[in-house]
Image (tube, rainbow over all chains, first blue to last red; front, top):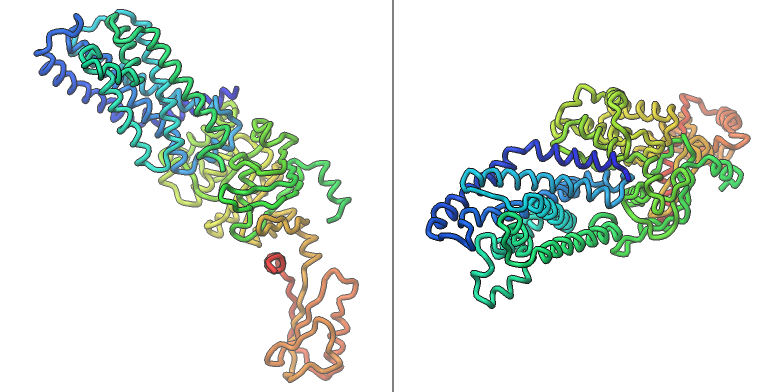
Length: 253
Length: 319
């Protein structure tokens, strides 16, 4: 294992994050605060509770997931796309590093940034609602697993993208709808039966459900299903990345 | 070409290329079976027109492109199967200016060292940056640097992990004369330290000045590899130009012989001869010119350059 290389990639990517730390953090904090004002205070005041949890608190896990998914995908996608765009990827391709080392470095840094932002949003949320986290360790575990698995998806998107439009496309057209329709702002049980079935095909449902269980001890789907879904998703992403480097797809001619 | 010499090179070769072929996805055959042994510590210049396959060759050795057939080893390590050991020995400076625009010079060089698995060594990096006259710019963002400086940053990155083999893909393209001289100084210093250097270039004078051996590539084939001096001597022709008085309309029969021509205007006799031949025939020619009653106004000789040789080879292979 080339630990020095992992460290170099990770620190290099983190340095990039810290150069733009304010814009990285201010924007999610601002948008989360707006969600709390609109959904928590304004609309939420008309909704009493959802399954015994105040609406303002109910949306916290979904809001964190919304931002964390977007951030982990777009950070990782940009992190590997940018060297491709500028041409500096030559160095990575000619370095004595394996796929695993490259992935740990890039995905680790992107996941770290998403995790940091997730924590910042959690702290911001405590200013608006009273939060009591039922299973803090599981909450942290769900957050970390989500950050890593979706950073891997972002990494794949970054390798796949041929231009900046494509880079934006997946987070915008796929991730955001999946999160909104994945129960960020409502319980699946509030949907008509037909849509309840459809929504079971949305992988984000399992993430948000598991994450919400860690907060409030209640879930739309069994916790084991949530864990299984994350594991399956992470496994698929790893397999795809392995295949990409093995064939050199869009990297090596 | 000379089996004995080849065997000698094999003993100490650090890069060994056997039957290397590369066909791109579109069907373009960039390399058509290259065999090349590169000796440890030598400077090898690869000459060839655009699209000859120079960059493809380098890309395969360095791991950026995959070979379609054949085998490449660096320091005895296969570049595909044992890529980690092979790439540890290699430094690459590509042709295009690929730099991390927003990074500082020193951080990007430190990154390169780490990427190649080496522990941080600030003293070494300071030395490299000083050697390349970049030390004063160490905290500047790369985007603020001139083109020549960016190229030196790329060289610094390639040197940061102390490679034993350095690939320089057109290191002095678009670089001014002064900077080119300083690049050459850097190359000479590296050679003294025993670093093997493979450079591709369009500038024949660069190959002539720097290289121990020259390889000529055209259309994916290695036309020849030879000691720069031997090549010059073997293929080098000299021309003797004699200015005469009075002008001639035709070459007198007493002067007519192989290699002698009368220049248009009749004021110059041009004699092309082989420097490697036992007898150049200059003395005889000059005696005959005098015997023909001609007055010698001036004379000069000119050695054909590597450029002439190169152009000759490439046109020959095109026919």
